[in-house]
Amino acid sequence: MAQITVKATSLGFIGSLRKPGDEFTINEEAFSESWMEKVKPDTKPAAKAENKAPAKTVEPKTDTKPAA
Image (tube, rainbow, N blue to C red; front, side):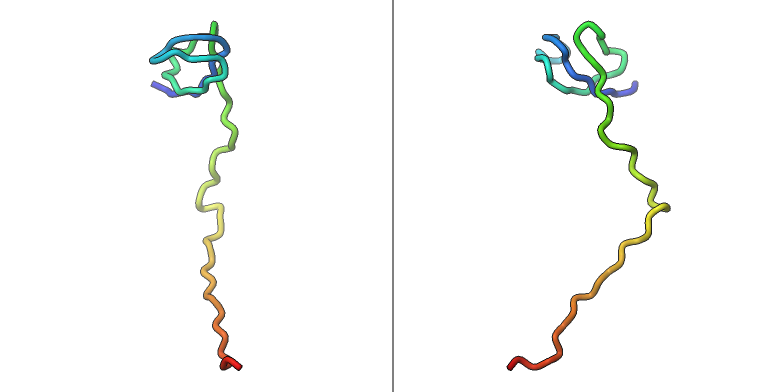
């Protein structure tokens, strides 16, 4: 069963009372157009690791001069 994120557009009940504006996750089969709307994901899928350069480790600089 696929999970989807929805927003209540009016009062409804699924697991608990949902008020307009509430966002929650349900099984896709439980979707009801009469009081819900599907929420589109805000972010794009993460890029695959092979497309990114590995992070570089930077060693902290140490001052070799004696304190004055």
